[in-house]
Length: 328
Image (spheres, one colour):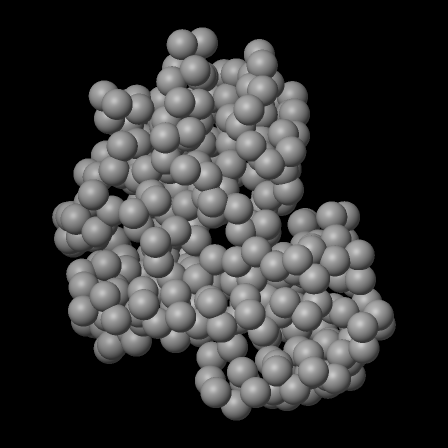
């Protein structure tokens, strides 16, 4: 199993600090989660049904009806490489580790590209997170569509993971996935980050309908639990909450970015900020000893911080950073 953020129990054991005393900034999940109301009893008692309004709500929110609900985007990450023709996958590195892991297991040959999709060469397919996790790099839609067109000419696919794009929907290519403009574009979306509903395990794949049909056949029935479908539909329909949350996250993302500048080079999204520093492991450990959990990417010198959820948590992080030695 690959390492992920959110391993709070493991950190509590390792550092001897009770769970209740931690400030967990390791995941990039919105700390101001959409407030799930009481759900109707039938969501718990009946088998999930496709005509419960979830697909309709998702089509309206994302701007594309060519979609398939899945048990979190992780389900699609693991399945997609098995359905696409084996070949060379070019991907922008570093990125969420589950992606290359799944493509390698499916028998593809991988080539890491440093930062951009320039130099696709003879790649059959291409993959990137936008904005990127963990570097926060944002790729412009025009460049991505150009890459999709180049891959289309050779029968390949462009896979985009847009898990962190909800706060800046103007950069999203979800509406074009599977369309005449980009028929070979596959976009993954999730309710885990912006909506803060990671525990529901709800995501969506947007792509060509023939590919979605193959995916649905492989996944089988009832891939998303009834209560999760009900909560997801209500969250997607709550435009007032979304309109309030986007500017809040933009402001808090800027605040976090500025707070971390003393540690090194900072790049950020509205949901997380990443520091590039050779001292990432030492800073991660120094903060963890004070009950603040971050996400350390040991192989590339990156330290990722999610948003604190309350003003006391912001102050706790600020105090810890103020006392953090220049080199720890």
